Image 1 (tube, rainbow, N blue to C red):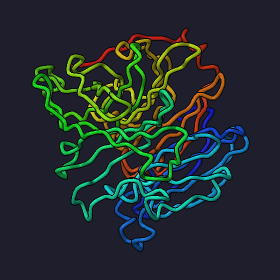
Image 2: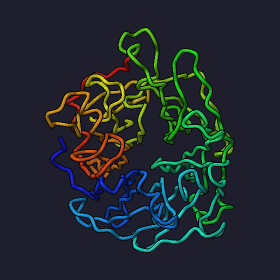
Image 3: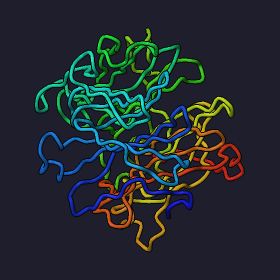
Length: 392
């Protein structure tokens, strides 16, 4: 069921063979909300090349109840919105596995710069038609740490999803001209190394956080090998609801696989997530696809709220979005997805944007809606706690 405090930002007709993705959300300095998403699916390849990769931007003046389209940005996909020094930015790629690009708006998301060259937002040039570098990004958070901005990327080299993803971090000094390529620093790329104790295909979609020891880390989604009935018999270990850490060093010059931690429990760690730290409550929070509601293994038809004090032990607080239509668990898993949530603290509330496959989507992955929700007084929900642990 959709949470009662849900509004719809975008509905996409599934008959177009185009689905909506990469939801990203930010609060402007004046309190307005800005949301964005891109378009994916086989239908985009029937469009002219210049119209193929597009991000739509929306603004809300009433705390997310209604939304107005403010811009359609060509040559933009897999982006993240963030605010820095009074301007709003969108950083992502020019196309799927394309160049790293950034845009700036100084009027609340109506007009944007165009990344035409290295002085105006073209940060790192991608290869041609899936020849390296093949840059990959999502609505990965942008975190300011010691006056530098950090976000996670991957280079798919050799081109293979997801085993070819080589993780790296991109960073720039927060007071620099973020449209200039010379302002940005790219760490070395870290290839995925298989863990002998688990069946995992690769990693992607890192999330930048400062851990409880004050170290800057990228926490990556782990993509398990697709299990069969072995998973349910418990005879094989798949990295279900697990994540792994890369430590960021020397102001973004280096990123090192934290092998001492190994694979760490994280609810929903096999789907894209965003972790943020609440300075007031001194806890980490994550919106994640809750796998506790039974088989099959791959399902995104429940979105829940969790928190942790140490990034390893998590507490489940409440279910935010759930499929209440009369379906079998298998049918619901195939058709429904509340996924790729991006979110922000908004005073005493949490606001979130979700890639939603619901009521008419062809499958759980190919979303037909972008929806917005609000969790009011999120710090007061501890009475609904229940324990959570991973399943192996």
